[in-house]
Image (cartoon, rainbow, N blue to C red; front, side, top):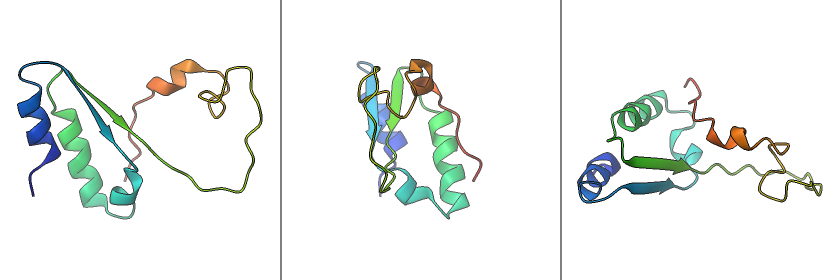
Length: 90
């Protein structure tokens, strides 16, 4: 299997790249080796790659309407929260 980091590094040679990783927790939860390897690869990507990883959470709670719009409902209109790229310790 070809590593996403290798493909991304090749693709970003000609222009910047945005890499979207969907439902990342499904691949990493309960596997500290995979989490550490993924974090290492992310830290060593070229500077012109932006990585966006999604996380889904199932719950029975109904979202409340918020003045910040649907995008910021879970962030309490704190737009800087969207830029928090800290990784959890696995």
